[in-house]
Structures are given as C-alpha cells and as structure tokens.
Image 1 (cartoon, helix red, strand yellow):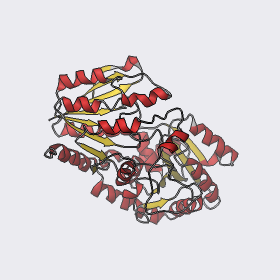
Image 2: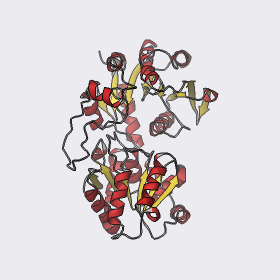
Image 3: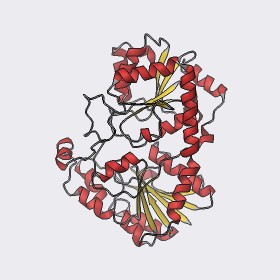
Image 4: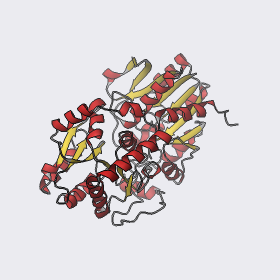
Length: 417
C-alpha cells in the first residue's frame, strides 16, 4: 500500500504536527508501507523533491500571505495544487492522509485526492477549519471553576469582532463543502471532536497521538550534564516545553512561582523554547517580579538535550489558557516518568488522570496551580508515584505503535457506501 501524507509543515521545520507526521511515516515504513509526504514551504529555495530518512518528500513553494489573503488561501485552488496533482500522478497512492492544511495549502486538495482514485482521510489537530486562531471565546478568565463540559460554539459575530482583518463570511461554508471528500475525519482528542462538531465540522473518529517510549530513555550522565550546563544541580525543576505565547499559561506559571518560592527556595522554572518574542517578554516580567534567578530559558532543544531536560525535571507544567487539543508534551513527560500539571481546557484530561498521574487545573486558579506545584516538588514519593502511573498510562494506551495500528485499521476498513 502506498500512502501519501499531506501537511502544511514538516521537518526540519520545528512543529508538533510535522513531527507527528514524520513519526507516523517512519513507523508505517517499518511495517512495509510505501510512504511519501507532500508539504509546503515559504522559501522558494527550499522547494522541490528530496528523500528524508527513506521517505520521499515534495515541498511546494507557497508565498507567506498576510491579512485577508491568508483567509482566502484555503478556499481557492491555487497554492501548491499543481505540484500536488503532479505528485498524485507520479506515485498513485492508495491512501492520501491529510493533516492541517489551511495555513499554507488549500482544502481544494481534498477533491484532487479523491478524484485520483485514492481513499482520503483527514486528521484535525486544531480549530482552523472554523476559526482564525486560538479558541478562547468560551473561557472566562475571571472564573476558577473546573466545569465538566463547555459550550464551544463561536458565532460569526464573535469571529468578526476578534478578527476584523481576516474574517470572511462564507469561509466556513466553502470549507465544509470540501469536507465531503475525505472518507473519514479524525481528531486527536474527544474534546476536540466536541468543539469541531459544535461549530459545524463533521467528525467520524478520534485517534489520540502516540509516542515511541523507548526513544525517550536517557542516561543518568546525560541528565547530569544538562543540569550542570544550566546550573540545576540540587534544584527543584518545573519544566515548560513548547512554543510560548500569551495562551500557554506561562504568565500564570510566574504567579504560581512567586507564591511558592519561599516554601521551595531552590525551585527553578525551566523554559524550553526559542529565546525570542514572548519568551523575552516573560523573562522581563520575571525580572520585574524578582524571579530572575528562578527562571531559566534554555532556548530550543531537541534530541538528547530535550530528553535530558525531561529527565532533569521534577514536574512538567502545561497550563494553557486556551483550548489545547492534545498536548504531546504530556506524553513526553509520561514517557520520561514525570508527573504532569495540565490545563482543564482541551484534551489533556484524556491522558492525565487527576490525582493519579498528575493534576488537571484551571490555569486562572493560580492558588491551586501553586499548591499542586508545591506538593509535587516537596513530596518526592508522590511525584515518583505519579510519574510511574503516567508511564504506565502511556505504555498501555498511547504508544506510537498502538497509534499507527489504529491508522492501519482505519485504512483497511471497508469504504463507506
């Protein structure tokens, strides 16, 4: 069986979805499938065909549109369509599996894939089929409750008021028209499925992301060298990993850090991510709050250094203040046997068991966030027990192998009539 993955972004560009596609492609390749990737780049010099770890990759040049042009991009049969049709003709895939495309590639590609005779599948990781950014409309920053369910519906008026320079009234309708071409529309969490369906996007299945547990093992020496490099010896480490933005909860983390620094004087908040933009703003905030010594920014890490960062941590914090579909950092922490304090907004609660492998918190409840951090930093036995529970949780339900088997089962199901 020949499989073509299609995604807006792909390595070496550092994106979570791109890494998920790469891991899926490699695992399917190990199992004897012929796997190819079609993606987009904003730099013409990077366009073309190449082979990456045995996987054929086509990169189509797509200009970096801004403003209203960005909104029209997913609606018209332009950027990348010619190259995509040529790729379909060359490899004649049995399956075309799309991941997010509306930021660089158009939804019209669904139609081309279907007309090629391939079976077409779509996995959605975010809200961009009906939204223009982060889903926050349903969140009340003044409430610290933990509701059992949420009303995710976003009206056209809300979108217009928040994104006046991007809003197109008929955008959702056109996107929904092209969503008739994928045979199955899959989401990465049940909570994301609810949010999409409440906004008119049909969903057929949920397949959670998985992780290759063995690849997250690291030696004690490597962890020690990481601690030495960033002066973390004998420190209690709160780890934050990801592309930082105002919606990732770091502002709330700084408030919580201020609340616990007297009780945990050797605490350090380690931020793993590119040292630019919002990271610099948060570092300035830390200095203003008298927390400069307690905050360590490592810059972007990958490979063994990233694994060593997890191994050096006491707890991972992922307190996003927006809808976070299914943060892979939770899986990475559990694969490293570390407890997690995760947001109540999104799909984290589908992997993090509150009071068993970590805690689910409302990030705006900074008192609760601080109390959970303090408890896991000071109670080593509980932190270890939570970390072991998280490891077992991933081992028994969220491995890369199990994830890919679900994809294979999806591909091999009889087509719907």
